[in-house]
Image (cartoon, rainbow, N blue to C red; front, side):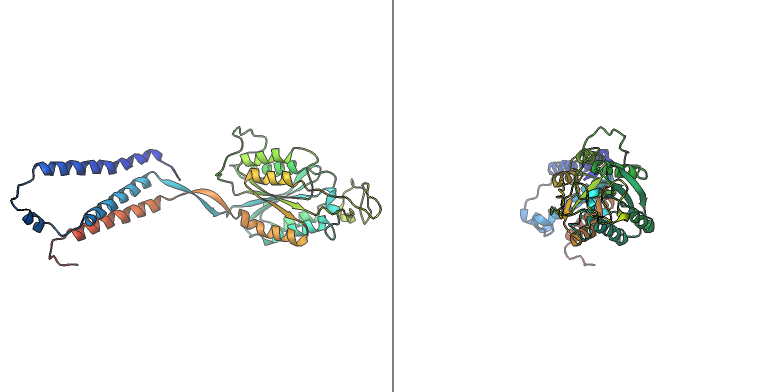
Length: 355
C-alpha cells in the first residue's frame, strides 16, 4: 500500500492527542472529586455498565478516527485489474527450420494457423501487432484492432534464413513505444536496470513463437532485459520436437534464399534423413522469467493451439495502483458512528424508554 499524500498521515496524531486530553481530564476530575460517605450510594448512582461496555465505544470511535486520518492521505493499493487497454505483439519465427515436417504438414503451416485462431479469438477491442523474424525482424502490422489486416499479413509470411529472436523482441518494444508514452524506445537509456518484483507491469505484452535458437543479432536475454526495464512481459513458446525430419515447404511458403521448396530437400540432408532441430529452452525460459512472463512448450498442433488459447488468461490482468480512499472513509464513518451510537445506548438513564 502507498499514499498519494503521505504528509497527510500527520492527521493520525489526532488519536494520541485525544487520548492525552482524556487522560488529563480524568486526572483533573480526580482532584475535584467530592467525598461521599457511602460507596454504596456511588454504585447505585452509576449506570449498570461492565468494563467492556465502557471501552468498546471508545475503541470503535478511535479506530474510526484512524481510518478517516488514513483516508486523508489518499491510500492506494496495488491490485490486479482487467487490461481493457491490452495490446499484444505477436512475434512469429519464419526461419527455414519452420519447414521441418516433424509436425504435419510442417511447422510453418501449423504455427501460422495457430496464429490465425489466436487473432480471431481475441476481443474486438484488443490491439494486436504482428512481427515476423528470420535473420532480421520486421513489424508487419502495428498494434491494431483490425483483424482482417492481421490475417492478411499472416498470409504473406514466407520462410527465410536465420533466427533473430533478440531483434524480434526489440522490434516489438519499439512498436509498443510508438503508441504507449509510458514505454521508452529501445534507443533510450533508462539507466535503472531490471526492476525487482513486485512490478507494476504495462498492459502491453509480447508473445514470441519460435522453433529454434538465436543465430544472429542481439542476444535474446539482453533484449529481454530491455523489455523488463520497461515493465513489459514476454511469453515465449518453443514449438516442435527433437525428432529428425525432412525440411519441406511449399513454394508459397519459401522466399528465394532457401535451398528447398516444393517437396525438395536441401541444406545437407541425407537420403530419407532429416535434421534435428534443437529449441534453446534455457534462453526462452530466461527471457520469460526476466520479464515476469512464462515459457511454454508445444510439440504438435493440438498443444500449440491449447497454449495460444490459454495465453489471454496469463496476461488478462495487470497490476495497477488503485486509490481506495473511499473505503477508508466509509470504514471510518461506520466505526465512529457505531462507537457513538453504542455509547449513547449504553449510557442512557436507567428506566428511560427505548426508541
